[in-house]
Length: 182
Image 1 (cartoon, rainbow, N blue to C red):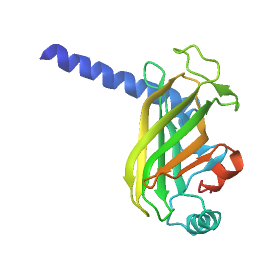
Image 2 (image 1 turned 90 degrees about the vertical axis):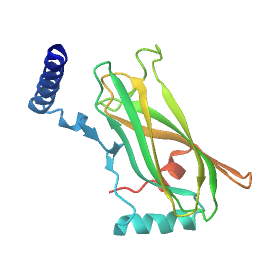
Image 3 (image 1 turned 45 degrees about the vertical axis):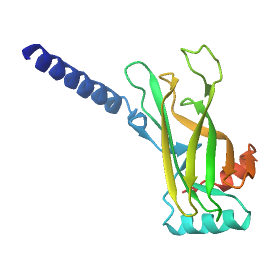
């Protein structure tokens, strides 16, 4: 029991040291990053969010995204990818699939060091049903292993509805119309 307590104290101490180093070196944005490109992501209930939802609905886009984030790398360099979105389509979503590409502090694409890929995109699928007006979030743990990752951008969105209809988006313009910017 005593060894376990000592180990916990050591881990907590190392965590505090890491946070102190990140703060002292100006790397505080690595602690919690909520950027896409250089735009902060805001919630749906802001004035900008409401306008963005109306514009997306006018363009027949099925979802609106309020958050895209990466976390700071864990001790093995693993970086999570998280997304929050709202179904604005008026139809029930069966599957929502997303692709994301990671970028470093100087806006270069970076890949997964363990997988050995220079430019690695990750993909994930959320299983519904996701009813109209419902908000859904998902986190892909350790999507990449690379300690230089600063943020991620969505590279594709595929939405499959319960009626079998499938919508696919991979162009930056359509994807950006689905994201609530600051």
